[in-house]
Length: 351
Image (cartoon, rainbow, N blue to C red):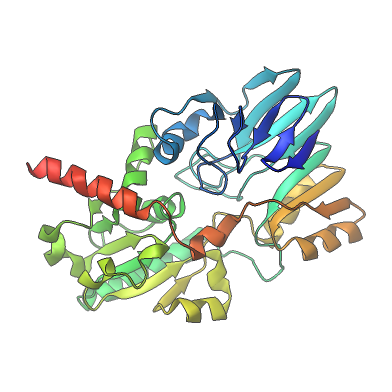
């Protein structure tokens, strides 16, 4: 039912693409990360929960249709519905049904609860196209209680020493999840413009976040010593970062599980946290789908393909341009624009 074309995953029967990497006439978007939501298509379909963040990424004038989770639409005879993926706000799995056959495209997903988005729901299907970003047995995430206890202890100790705590995290999803989970009584929370802009889209959707402050205002400098500053990875080593003198730095990513990645980032701490499923989560999801055929895309597909084949499943890798958690290790392309946008708004308020 789905094939890979030069524009991306294509459903010929329904004449639409899923997360196309080139402009198309109709794009179903699983979530608003830049490797899945690309500008230029004539029309987009996404979850109702994801509309604000998708507009933040693609622009206010883009044609966006929405579906509530579980609601379905007929596209040229293909029944299409969206189901929570638990990755970031509005993230969806796409279920397609045509002539009795069911396919599901997971997009990026994670299991477990997250205060900033709807929880992942397993969807039964005949064929499952699943992400496989962390498809190695070494990737197993700790519980949120343990994670946030570690982050809070780091922040509290820094504040006691009068040092700002700078936490690097991807601006859409990871940053908001961290902000919602830390102990806001420790001190003020400041955000880089790229993060603060997405915070606003989350609040417009109804997601409760602790109070945050834009980190561009010089007037707040006297409070930075006890503050948590949340910034995208692209600011690591930047001129912007220098104003937080004597700051302790930390990086939040699933890749921090690997010691070499922590060393290469040259930060004081690495917190292992991801918005993707770990090894056990991938297996649990594939089992719950009851799929007869599994196609794995981006990340460590080889070991998982072999594991599934050993279990008697039909499994193979599917080559796409999706990058998954690579975003955490690369440049956040929205940083400069969002920083300028927030800076301008701050100026308007002052005037």
